[in-house]
Image (cartoon, rainbow over all chains, first blue to last red; front, side, top):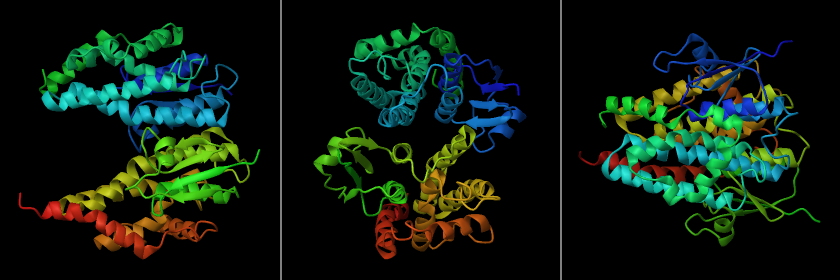
Length: 219
Length: 225
């Protein structure tokens, strides 16, 4: 049976980028479909009726939603190449814990750095740096969160980087100055072709966000 | 080396209960400690420095936090009576419904519980819309896991017990049998299942606790605006 893989996605979505990196790491050929989130396709609504969100992976007609679930699925199906999760159950639990942490903490604190002003924005910046410092602590002296190898936690976190130019510009802060270890890790990830190809240019994301900020009355 | 398994939980936390269930269902020998969250033990603070929350599973001295992460760890470590299926598609579905339970069902039911007046009406409406997805998912199935209890059943299991508590406190029925026949049947079957039925926290104690938790919200809503 032909292996038919389709990804419904939105180019600046960090969650979508995770899936793109995972598919690239595994060398999986797929069809990429760009969604207009203001005008969602019937296919998206049919494949993700519960959340109506991207990314959605469609493998041989069957839908998979929620990026951590999609990435784990990809790792289980294309298991002969580039393992993303560790093989040891305890290490796997740690990896899942940190991806859950990233999902609970990064997105909301970051979103507030560009969707708020004044005191609220200052509080968001503080929270964001606390999150990064916690992650730096977890990284320690390892080259990647996965240890010697790029893995599930790395690929779940690195997509946020293409939004950093936006956060830094809107929030008037500099991540490298505060968290140099984090940026060193970013640079190591960007050396991977799969990552470099999957991340959109930070300035392009900024242009897109600027338009949204204008609409929100924040410019 | 002897296996040492310790579970930090509380008497009432539904998240801790999940971890308790899976260890019992697998026949794992373990100790548990019911924490006093107003006076957290050094062990808890040391084992879960990121969130300082329960449950925490400590296996041979190594801590694991976040109840869904604990469930998968236990399932992978003790292979008897597997809770996740072998097939990757079915596993993804199981994980999806477990996550849906925590992200959407829990949040919507909690809102229906704490809100007042018109806001409560809206919150109840939203909770019912969310529960409809669960009703749909149960079509043709005895449990969310299929013929037997699986990961999503343990994740959603709190419904079987706490819904009754919430309904009693707010005086509103959230899961009506006529509207949710499959979900009602599942709640009953799950609640009476071996291991599960012996573990429910005392009903009256839960009613007292949640009534007290709701008080500040009632008081705030009663303040003149």
